[in-house]
Image (cartoon, rainbow over all chains, first blue to last red; front, side):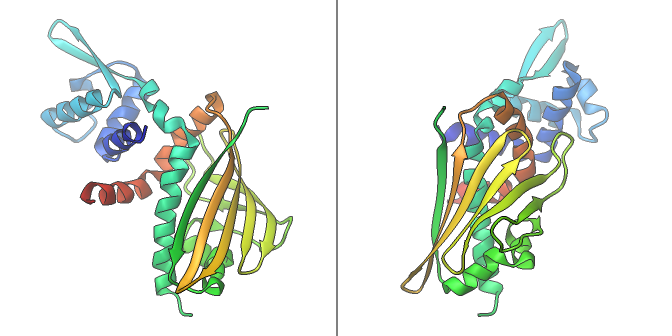
Length: 107
Length: 140
């Protein structure tokens, strides 16, 4: 129950991977080359990110001759769709911040 | 009528209730650990928490104060675009060496399309905070 959202958060916590996933969500299918061009990241790096996204079930790949086309699988975000999962992590983090603030405050 | 669920986070803070209460009710202090806000400690007052707007979310949590019992209990509605309608209640209990602080967020509905859409944007908003959290989990 807990591990699925954790794995997704870890995968999406990387800003480059998040950008790739968001781009595929908007654009539909794209090749590694099309994803690499505007990203400022090397093609092997983009390929590695795609492989991590694929392991997390966030992207789907389709071979077509020598080209591989990637597309987003937004349904993989479903475990994150639970407000309680989100707010559970949110409030625990905010409790940490509150404790930090209390330590900095005068009596 | 479908049933709703409640989220509880509780922690003993090594600080007196009066001090914890200030952190929960003074605008500048609240902003330090939670979000920008125009909170007023008056029952019936409407206020908002605000953060960076997103393409499909205005970055606003709409609130209304429901209960103010100084140093003991504070409750407000916590509603956000995307179908979230909940109530957040803070309870402060003096314990040896500090305050037991309990946060209850109640009124979570079953998953539906509205929640799904809202949460898809919600996670982006919270991801920076989550990165810190996950860094902690990874090293644990």
